[in-house]
Length: 91
Image (cartoon, rainbow, N blue to C red; front, side, top):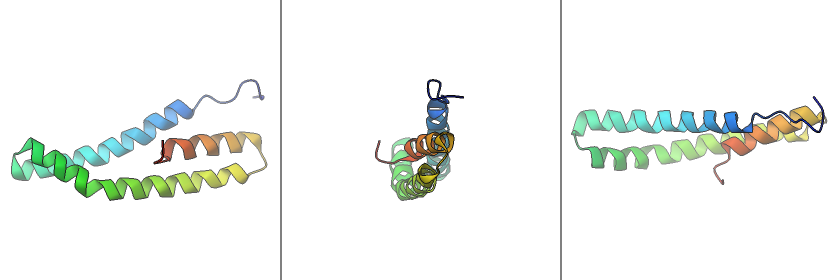
């Protein structure tokens, strides 16, 4: 691996981050839908109840992976930056 051919894992990392968020959100919407049988209210409740959890998880994961950027190895820096960007809530 050299500087001209960096690892191309940012897209797969972003996809994994999004899939985790979607799984959390959809499971909460389904739980509410099973109780209320109202799809519109279930979506509103799911977004309301999981928004803080998803944002908190994104901030924690982004912070943890951003620490890798301080590593002297360029490969670790690239991986850490890619993961921090993938989990960043400020995209």
